[in-house]
Picture 1 (cartoon, rainbow, N blue to C red):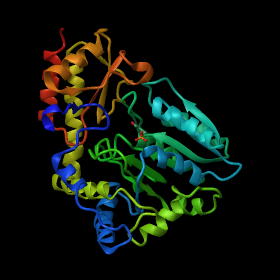
Picture 2 (cartoon, rainbow, N blue to C red; picture 1 turned 180 degrees about the horizontal axis):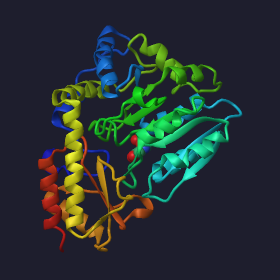
Picture 3 (cartoon, rainbow, N blue to C red; picture 1 turned 90 degrees about the horizontal axis):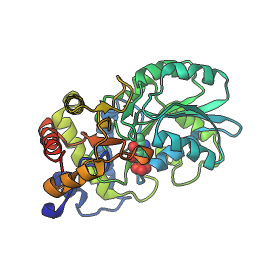
Length: 361
Ligand SMILES: Cc1ncc(COP(=O)(O)O)c(C=O)c1O
């Protein structure tokens, strides 16, 4: 299996370790029995530690979009609005998801590659009527990280507006202190820095957001936050979960805490710095505005106008691995190198060497 496998240095799904796969493939247990409850209870405190929260941490058998849609459906009351920050493909789409759910939505929109900045937010929220605010911490399509802590300071003045944060491609690679920052929903799919297979989303909801949800009609069934809480209290999920994912998550949490959170965050920063330096030394620029480059992936502007697709093909043919050739309208004009999850300075050094070796036809 390994010999024909193309190793993924794309920003999700990322490479999954053999240990994680072994855990994923453990025999099934009934999801309403004590074995499952023991499994669920065993990881709950570690998930809280990982998200720096006392809030319950829930597990949704869905990709991130399930919970991203759920967050606005659960938290926006009839007649109220959601304010969506848009700075790339995923954050732009969140606005469309809100309107497709019949919610009144407004935008804070910047060019792709620009971050969302705290000063953009206050004037808009002061207009009033916003029950929720959506932010993508790390916009994967552009490799841009918005300054979460500074934005959180602004959000403190708007307690009626629930602060929903997608940390899909930053959770576990970057320290995000949910309670200190005052986040109301924090979510991530597991196929990025968790380095699990896609299909599970980890999310936490603050007490005040849960109270809000109770007052919102038509929250739907599958993603009803109130149902998640009721089941969490019994160490269960509302419906049959992907038990394989939860076994894999237990195994991954072992790895994360064996390494230590601070060391894990430092490793991600080191890999980001190495990759940025490599790109600059080769005459490329970073695509995001300076100072806002992602720590888990590098989105490089193709300032040298190289044939990115041909480069990736050579990389794949000679070294059985791939990077990403640019997302959506950035295809060919950027390329993205993922350095998250189980990658190390050593594996990234090897990748950067292979990129050098294959840079010419
Ligand atoms: C920042 C961000 N948010 C949301 C999503 C959507 O995740 P999914 O397709 O797993 O639902 C992605 C996917 O890459 C992402 O990078």
